[in-house]
Image 1 (cartoon, rainbow, N blue to C red):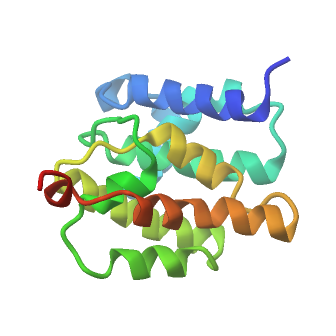
Image 2: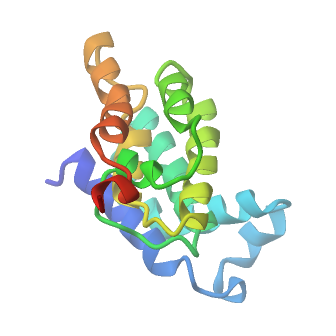
Amino acid sequence: MTTLTEQVDAAISWTLAIRGVPARNADRAVLARATQPQHFAAAFSVLAGAGHLRDVPPKVRHGAVLACALAAENRRVPNGTARLGAAFRRIDSPNIGTILANVTGSSLAVTTRLLGSLVRRAGAAGADVNFYDLGRTLAFWDTGTNTARRTHRSRIVYDFHSTSKPEEAAR
């Protein structure tokens, strides 16, 4: 029996493996209904990871599917090993810490949009993004007790502030 985290990681792994596959190889029925790029990415990633999310509770599955969609949409952003906060630290903007602090109190939908924007900005800054960490973050965003949820959500902010900027580390 696999854990929920392993199932989420497997779905992300499938998405990362197929995100460079040409669209002509995707399921035509799903593509016909996809009117916007994010719908295509979500549909394609759901096809890839659906088997791994079958036994996952609905709240966890929803977050995992959104993370798969972000991984598929940002196929030019390499997968990394550092925590999300560390990747976002490489973005050259003074308001990233404020954005992350506001994310902790947001709904899953708002968080997905904000983190998607930060993933694109991190990719543009040349940072690798740990899509497995992103998957776990979104999958477990709305689960657990208030204390556990608050701890889980604030981890990104902690990772961001506990990582030094690349130019600071070089000094």
